[in-house]
Length: 331
Image (cartoon, rainbow, N blue to C red; front, side):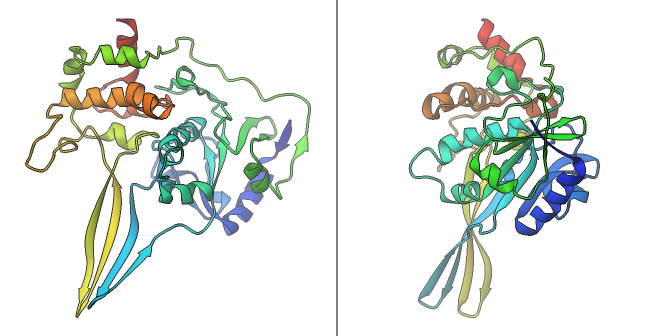
């Protein structure tokens, strides 16, 4: 295996920050978050699962799609697309897995999502293997793992003397140019995985529970706060709105904005005229789970869950996705 020392990694990151937009785990007021950095001095190298996924850097929570300017009868339209390359460093394998799940809809279906595609093509994913599985983690039950390299361009694994460097893709080989490494015998240490896997029921099993009382039991606890959606690496629902940003003599400027939406929000399915086809919290929480384990895999291939466990630890009323998965699989 090839090893890079921490000092060499930091020097490489400092150079990389001059060439591309660099995103990495940072300490933000005591919270571990993926954030833009300008140097290696800002980067955390020992950290748990960041509290939010890195999805925001390929599918932003709020983004301007178009700028429209009207002056008299003249109308100009500017499409807003990213231009600079981007490197996400220290990405946990579950977050790379989440991006692969979004790819199945935004890239593998026609028409492709142009805005997501532009960011995806310009982004290199440098992952950091997890030294352990944290509270709520069940990635191994849904096809991932703490050292899963499948959806990364480079995987780094902490070892004695630095980090083992695993080049996964040609894009990864390109971004590693200039990083000093040495070759040594051996392999990175294995990571202990939780002994009790979480069962994953088939789409047919989920459909068979459509009218089950478990949705009422869990739904009555739900606050519709939407935290589960906002921390999730795979949720991808959005809304598009136009807003007037400036009006001056004879000239109007408008922005078309895309923002995340959440199927657990009260008004998500409200239509013109006021009808809401999912009026209760039980309806909405059922849809959330069936989307992840039934509708999405049947329509697009992968599960809509990567087992990161963020929704488990973030839910203020302790709705546990693994509890519901077991309940559906074992009935």
